[in-house]
Image 1 (cartoon, one colour):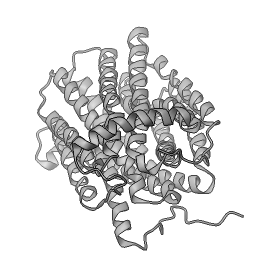
Image 2 (cartoon, helix red, strand yellow):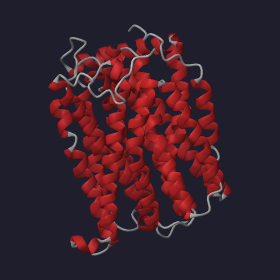
Image 3 (cartoon, helix red, strand yellow):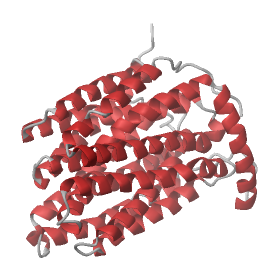
Length: 434
């Protein structure tokens, strides 16, 4: 009989107060940077692009521009991720890379506050830089997971990070939504000014919760490299070796192939859902509230998926999530009423964080601990490469067919294909040697 475990197993190494502090500091970064994901990527930017920066542009054209911007940001991350990950693993560089890229995202996000009406090219450029900073920093954030906990606690700690991300991102989005609805309460002229102030507040919030990670999380030095020059040279050499290792290790290849497909669908829904709703004629206020539903449902649901991963298996939890996503896609194609959008938002909240957190913890089990940033560089590389295809595909289908509804059906192939490949992953396989 399998031994009973705490559903989050948060006794972890929590008897060690320093380790507990590291785990909390690590998870709080997700609490902070999720404001960019909720307010900028999923919430205000798509609406503001359509209604303020490109107000005189056809909805399908602005959808195409948004999809293209997301794809460009993902391509930039794609080109850097493996090399930077390989360099970071040669010494204690993960935190430094994380903070540098977070700074890029923070500065670009704050600068959006000063972009005037009609200046959509500048807004898109800053959005791309913000996306690059956000996604690149997450490579090293994910890689630090193996530094803050032991393998048997990966599901619980990974779920904790995503859960706090949903809660922090949701609370901050709720505040920004209230700010835009009641700007006079805060001495602001109108909702437009409130949204522009929100961009600046996101930058400050993100900065605030980067500090605990920088101060308290310790990288476990596995290689005696102290200079960036030496790390760069050895990192490039190690990258070649890792390519060979990945090619030889069937479980990693199959998992990355599955992840590449299904996370494309997950990320595309995150990035394009509000844009899709605006194109169907729903009001921005209702769409933002629907996004809040996703966030607040996502908080307990992500923790619950941590329990599923520990009690049933990470693969089982991912399969549950993908089955729900297939149903969501079919429902979204026929979507007619705002209550349905709310229902879909709640359903997404039930599974989104679970699929993301269990994918991260399952992958962490398959890779060697002493090359986590490098292997997570490949992991995020495929995630971002998927995000190149998904948004551009949706935007392209909407542009060429003049039908936003048809574009959503393309996601079915991604979810189903990812689930089929995942069947062949053995989550108990031993990590390869490096």
